[in-house]
Image (cartoon, rainbow, N blue to C red; front, side):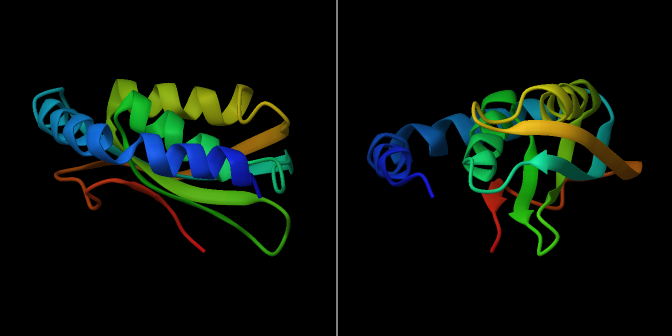
Length: 126
């Protein structure tokens, strides 16, 4: 885990993230077609704060969904939002990740257009 980063995030984020999230969701409804995509990231992606960085990047970009570790050593999840923002997140999940991660490949599946968001935020699942 990343105790120092989690502690700093827990102290520094709450007030602003709700305001930013509200603005991000409002902006999403007018930004064109909404997309949803499932993903699975392979490589050194567990024990390197990958989920925490994924959550942070998703909130920064302005997409919703979730991320979690799998028993197979991968990270899986779903991203929803305007197409261009989902594409930005797909690129991040394929090429960037957390600083200590090594992404070997990222599989995307079930990509589809949706009429409304199924989530109100981006969260880490356990």
